[in-house]
Length: 221
Image 1 (cartoon, one colour):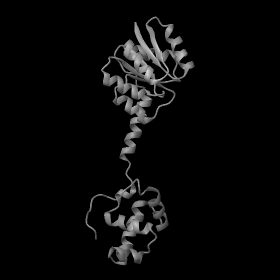
Image 2: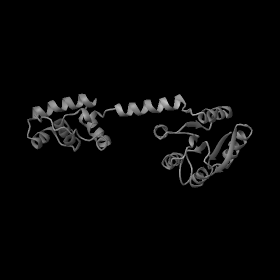
Image 3: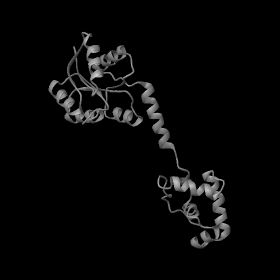
Image 4: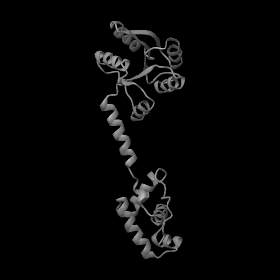
């Protein structure tokens, strides 16, 4: 017999899961809960084989509960249930040792199959969810801001340009020649994919906070 505590804050879904699992002789719902704190108490009291937990719940959400169960050291396998799940939640759930992730639009037979596999010690992590989340996270980590390709001097020129300063004023501010300013601007336009100083100024206004100046001092010509 596989014992379960089922946690969901929607009464209709909770009742539906109970009914579904109740007809399977291998599955027994020993307790239910509609909020995180109650779920935690029920899991501690009944020590089920599996806790089927909605990710979005009052008080403690599914990921919070997973963390609390881990810290308590209870031998309970956690399957997270949700209508939708973000990439960050998928990655956090995997890292925290979730035994399964299921979406609420799956077929009832698939949920039963998931629970049986988890009870046998397996994991139910749908490839389309996991692969997509990991691939998008890797793509984000690889993404490099165009501002990061600028040299320290080019960044100084860019900041002054964004303030509305003319080339001659930039040259005076940085103690470089007007010709050097023009060379820097040509390089800046090329690296940022910009056609003119107005475009550069708009890019700085939108992204400067998220893409700070290069940390390396380098050689300033």
